[in-house]
Every structure is written in C-alpha cells, then in structure tokens.
Length: 102
Image (cartoon, rainbow, N blue to C red; front, side):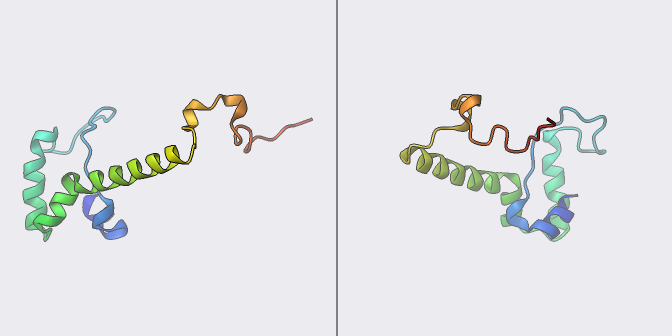
C-alpha cells in the first residue's frame, strides 16, 4: 500500500501513523510500531532512499503541520475566528447543503 500511495501521490504526500485502533488484524510482522524498523529495512531494499524513508517516518507530517501553523497564525492576525469558536447559528455555511421540503 505504501508503494502504491508513493506512486500515485508522490513521496512528499505519504506518511505513517501509529493508529492501530479499529482494525481487526495487523499484517504479519507489523503488529505495532516497534516493527517499523523492519518495514523501513524492507522498503530500503525495495529502492527507497534514506531521505525518502525520513519523509515517510515523519518529516512529511512535520512539514504539513508547519504550514498548518502558518495558516492558523495568518488567520489569527486577520481576525478570522476558528470555526469551532463561532456559534452554530452564526456560521455562514450552517445550512448551505440542506434543502427544505415545504
């Protein structure tokens, strides 16, 4: 799956999570995050570079969160309130996708 995502989306858009909750079974030899070194060794043998593995392991996530923080700060400086701080009745899109049957 990781190789497919890398092929479709590119190395800068793939990452690993540690959320093993909500799944019925795990892949053999990938029972938890302690097995990630084995996964990285397998990917390294499959043509991945160390730089690409670093992106997969967390650099991509850190890059995205840095951008998220920039957007948050720009919106704060512009006076844009966080969506969750706006009362539901005052949200401009609250009923944008609703239709009425009158």
